[in-house]
Amino acid sequence: MAVPKKKTSKSKRDKRKATWKHKAVIEAQKALSLGKSILSGRSTFVYPSAEEEEEEE
Image (cartoon, rainbow, N blue to C red; front, side, top):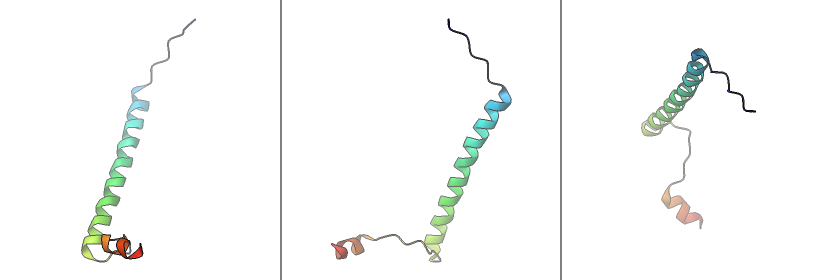
């Protein structure tokens, strides 16, 4: 026979939602930081350009 599940407390629900949102905030900060770094020219991040890809083939 089916048994109803227990209700999740508001604190558990809010904690999960806060964790999920915090992960998104961290990723957004990383993306913004990388973008600023690339635009300023101080980046050590190397990304292939269209010209380099054509030369390799």
